[in-house]
Image (cartoon, rainbow, N blue to C red; front, side, top):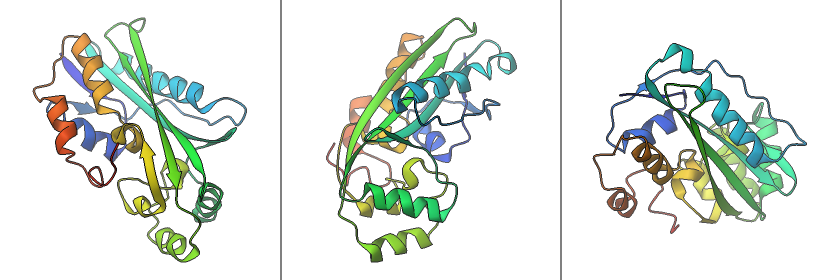
Length: 210
C-alpha cells in the first residue's frame, strides 16, 4: 500500500525517512488558522486530521499521515511567528519559563471514515533570557516557520535547558507513535524502533536526555 505524508515540512520528511519506509509527499490543501481561545491540544488534533483528510480524494487506496505542532504557554497558544519581531516577542515570553509542545498525528485510510489520531506532549524548560544569545539566534532567521519561533533540532537548542518527553515529538513528528499507528494498519517498519531511539540519529537528539 502507498504511504503519503501530507506535509511540506522538511523536518517531518527527514524523520519519516528514519523509519525506512518508502513514502510520497503531498502538499495538503488544508489551511490551518490558529484560534487563541481554543486549546493547543484540540487545535493540533483538528489540524492534523484536516491535513490528512484533505488529501484523500487525491490519493485513493493510500495510507495518509497528517501532523501538526503547536505550543502552549500558560493559556496562550503559540503558532508560527509572522516575522522576526514576532519571533523575538515569543522567545522573550518563553525565556525562563516552561511550555508544552503538542504534536498530533492523524492516519487516514482509503476511506475517509477510517481515521486514527494520536497526540504527544513534551514539556520544555527554557533558559533565562540572554539578549545576546537571542539576538544571535534571530539573525539566523531559523525562527521563521517554526511553532514557538525556535527549532530544537537547530540553533534553538541553545535556548533550551531541558525537555521532558519524546524528542521527535518536540521536532514535530513522534516516530514511536507513527510506527505503532502504521503497524496497526499492516505497514510494519523494517527498522527496530527501540534501536532507533537508542541511536538518536537526528540533529541534537542525543543532546537531550528524554
